[in-house]
Each structure stands twice: as structure tokens, then as C-alpha cells.
Image 1 (cartoon, helix red, strand yellow):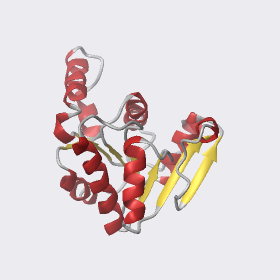
Image 2 (tube, helix red, strand yellow; image 1 turned 180 degrees about the horizontal axis):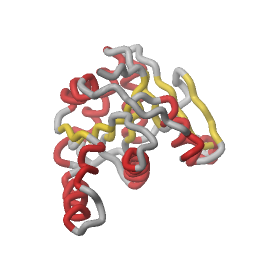
Image 3 (cartoon, helix red, strand yellow; image 1 turned 30 degrees about the horizontal axis):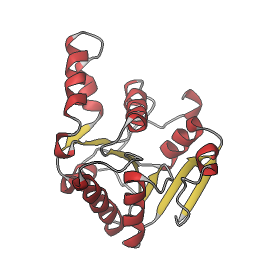
Image 4 (cartoon, one colour; image 1 turned 30 degrees about the vertical axis):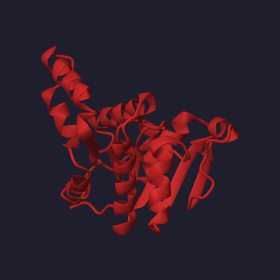
Length: 194
């Protein structure tokens, strides 16, 4: 089984219309702190990103934020983190988040969340890494995305094995067990290939 000491969480930078998503983010933040797992995330204080960071910190957990300078400059960075890394670009941010994380969890989010998620799944397809990716289909939020995967497979653009590049859970309490059951990674990631 894989040992998870740092978990990258992708999630929305906006406040969702359904308050249940805010409570779900708080729940995960508390789970991380209780399990001694560092949160690696995009470094913002807004939306679900800010909620999960605050929840992890409130529960005495560690939070490492990675934010590009142009976002830091317009004051969206969280200033009370364990560590805040200000980097030169979005690309470097994603690369550093990858390097610092043992696994990835995807909560509901928007375009940025999709961008980050698809990059990690694509890198798995290219055998650049085999770190666990957990898609949290909380309140069926990701159902349309999962249907899109089925559509792409049926159309012949994606191999069926792509569904094995990530695991889907429906409930917040299923995240930690899914991570703990993930197999040991075998691919040594080489950032120069990214």
C-alpha cells in the first residue's frame, strides 16, 4: 500500500451555490489534519480552496500553497499557511504541486479544476506517473464528466483502460480508505518529460 504524507487537492476557487459542497471541503480538511497528511493546493483564500485550507489549519494540520505571482499580486493568496510558494507561472505551479504530492483528490470545481485533473490523468496515460487520483463525485457533481469519458471511449478516442487511471468515490468518508488501498507507485516521475 502507498504511504500518503502529502495530498494535492484540486477544487473550485468560487463559492458554490449548494452549501453542502462547503461542508464537504471542511470535512476533507479535517480528515487530512486528523491523519497527519499535508494539504498541497493552489494557495488561494477564496472558494472551496480557502475553505479546505482554513479547515485543515483549524484542525492543526499543515497546508502548503503554491500560487503564481500574477494571482498573488492581486491578493488572492492565503497568507496564514504553513508554507506559501509564489512561482512564475501556472505551468510551474502545476509541476510543483505534482512534485510535492503523493496523490490527488478532485473535489467539485470549474475550468481550472478540470484543467489540473485532465493533466494528471493524461500524464498517467503517458506513463509519466502512477500516483493515485481520486475523483470525488459528491452529490453526483462529476456525473456529466463520467458520461463524457464513456462517450469518448465509445467513439474510439480513448481506451477503456483510461477509466482505471482514477478512482471514483461518492462520499467524503470514502476518500481516505480509497487512498490507503492504493497500490505502491512504480513509476519514478521524470519532470523533464513533462
